Image (cartoon, rainbow, N blue to C red):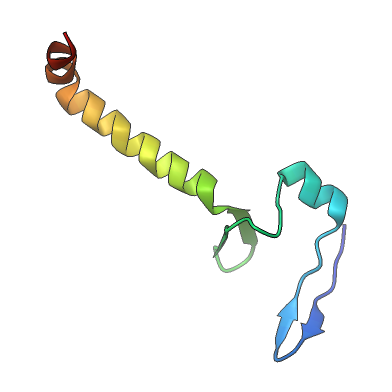
Length: 74
């Protein structure tokens, strides 16, 4: 699919078709993270990025303190 940017005030907008929005579960209320490597643009839900960071932090805690936490739970 090839798209063109649309003028929106002093900025430009990229219109994303409804079927794509539905497929990705993007809504007007979603926070989106936009990144680039200089050649391509990546758009993803910000909460999925947060979830990955939280899970990574929890994995580190479990790795480091899992035994102690398990003993405390008993």
